Image (tube, rainbow, N blue to C red):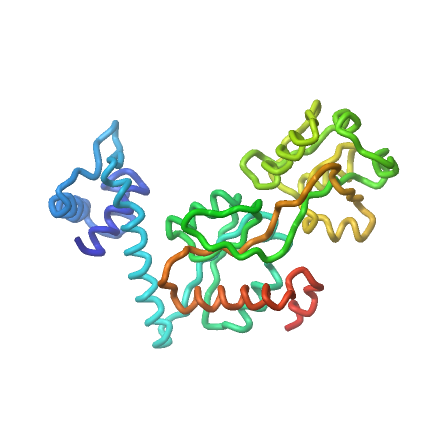
Length: 309
């Protein structure tokens, strides 16, 4: 078993055909077939079965997949790290983030990290938290900053950075702005703008509603926080949004936020990375940078200084 065979295996898993895998790897199709056949012969198992016009991974392939990803990733990281040391190219650091930290939390810190580490090229992928952690586990990224409820994630190290509780948000003319107490019965009469299913905010919003006995009698799903905020400005709906996503608008008086009745915050912005003994120098640098800020208690403060450094 060699790295080229594993690269062929990974591409077939990803694309599903020999011809497409050969094109992506810039190889001839017979060469791809040869590498796959040799890998199957050496392992003594069938890795793919034909289904219609595609190749579907077998159970053996599913077991091999995480090991293949890890081996190929480590080989590529080692090669790139040595090339960067020789000055041939920059070291690459693939990061992931969920939407709230990527938009409202990370930018000044990423800018500062780049200034402190000019030899590292950053690549950021933004997805929902669950998808981002899946990419981390499958070696598609090296570290992530995500919004998560309290708890553990198997195989990952989580470093809580700062709390980011959910708040009830509305425009300044909404009747709820001046009401003293907000009950589930009262809130049930409102139209709620909800995050799309699968997001941490949507999951925690539904848990909060269930805990206080709130049923959303009228709701609309929107995919982006910015869309939700713009909609709030135009009508009398309400939304449950992360605090850090509305700091600018509430400070300017454009939107109003109120605590959620009966809500106990379990939402944190966390650094996540794989729980393993080997990291590239660029990954170690990023983990050290973020952990240093967390231990120093500087997250969440005025970031204008970070933008100026």
